[in-house]
Length: 433
Image (cartoon, rainbow, N blue to C red):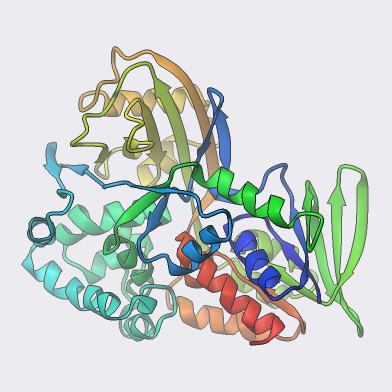
């Protein structure tokens, strides 16, 4: 079949991977000059650095299968070594390899009532890793029972402040009172994993994948913005705009790998009811700066810091295990939204992060050599209450356009593994098992 994929982010790359495995011809449409989406890359002092998708879980089975087909690049261990600022006090969250210590620390941070409430969900994921995604059986039941509450109402305050909020702020850009219990499994699955990083980075991996297939069964159409999807009696049609003008192409199948808000705009004319449902899926802003300093910023035993709800800086961490002079500043959460916008200059944002982090790391007198910065006004997906029911409504409408499928971070979760799982399921549905 001839198949079009709309969106060259992780979900689009994953969809292309599964289609190419079945020997279909793929046209990959990307509106920007570079693939990768919100896990994209930029040059920092002559080196490619990744804004997202750096930490690869040991249980990322589907993604690691993809990595093996891309010349199987080397991984390096990246222990968390994270501290957290709690009521002005630095609390070390873990020790590498010390499982009992880390468990006791989590119980202490949650408080016993909070741990008792959250443990059955952790246990369900440890028993069956497939439960740690959106719309899994375990969390669908939890959603039906408890999504009339937010996470802030579902769990005790101590558990929320010390454990849950640092997770939702990092993964969803959202406060606990903007998240729901039924969606929390996609976050908990990340907490119970351990992580490595690609030595050569995500940029190199994705470009290796593209170069292996380009001009054979894969066609990459950069700077091609898809503006319409329609169906006639014989085929599906894409309308697009590129620097040369506009055009149309016919396909046997089409898969959207766009974020929900972009897909809503695309479907306004062809499937307006679905477009309205996609707009119910929440996205939250995030700003990310990667800054290179002359000297090391972090000691080896503390490579990251999580900040509290009064700070616009949600966390600051070392870019890599051997990059102790490179800081990844992340700005998300309610306070961040009130201070940082698309119009805020990168220098102002980075200066704010340096002021907040400098009491804890070697920043104040450390010469800044280079930086890159990106702000995503709708960068992190926060899903919706009873999200699985919303997805079921969407699927019933999407089925009306035979041969059209949708995937993205709103289907199974925002992690790379969840995006690959969602893409695999979408390809199965659109092409056939």
